[in-house]
Image (cartoon, rainbow, N blue to C red; front, side, top):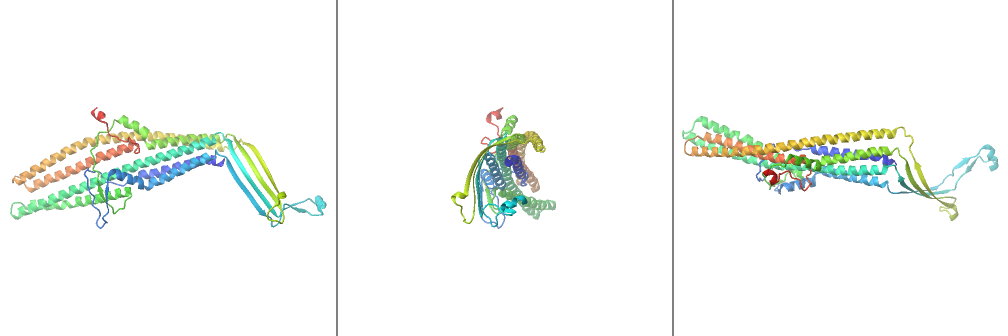
Length: 488
């Protein structure tokens, strides 16, 4: 029963492998810009790249990432290994049939030696050869476990719990990957919008410089006004370069997550949508407790740890096996194949019983180690449950804060647009200088950028709350409140 005794070690190693892969998955997050605005934007490709344009929606980005993720492929193989462990554990419940045989040619026959007082009876020979020139040994052995004191059921249960834990670890990696894709997609949208904002601001600064230069040439503007216009136009270059670089990096991050070639040109078809109020916190916490893949995986690991204790205890119990053997043996000389009278057949059946009375305290040590692992699993589940609850509360609060900030940003943009309109009217009527319009344009640019960041913050907060609750593959995975909840 060596396979039963080592099942615990194989299952533990498998769970640690899966946990390591998922930890790497959660830690490998591509850096993204801090905010994003919802406008449908075509992302310009790097110079010299081929004309390979891909129209990509957010759902298509999710599906591409899930289909091409190397980490999910690794977890899929881990699940296959866990499934093989289940099959191996169940194999110990079935009868084992083993065939063995040997066909031997004795180049020099073996002999046994006689005492001196017996040698005289054999003509003074002190040794006598045994067997023949040829020897045949063949057997069929059958073994069936009738009673294992719980070894088989515990080992099978551990393997099945390990398989379920692996499946939930894969679901946890899916949640993390979807979160990364959503934030990356939004990051590209924000970066594209920031490029548009900065290009517009530079265009206004250049026009203001042109107008001021003409006014200065006609003696209608001071040198100070001209110098400031030049400085403002020059200062618009650096933010535009940074915005374009941020767009390029955000695009590369999204392409990597989707498994696309870095030279692919993307045309994002989904804008950032308006964000609704979230569900009640109690409802989200209840869903987290039921749907969180991390908690589900830990629960199955806890089940495996309990069964590990049972398996260690079963090592002290008796075992009963049904054993049978059918054998063929023969010895002969001269010919390669024996005659009918030179072979013999035998058959036997046995009910075998074994009980480890003293094993040097090995079973006791295994029980103590399994109990310690069980306690660790219980503490880990308790810790992660509390951390998950805190994460949901924080994500819920962050979303409410982002929604509240969003309203203020909209009003700030409305005010900045009206201020810019009035500055333009005053300039057209000779009541203001171009610099006043330039100041109004700077305020409008900043207000639009802040609105872009606020809208991104709302969508990123939604993605973070979905990640905290868990269960991306659950058809009902939504955190938006219903109309009845909103009215309340």
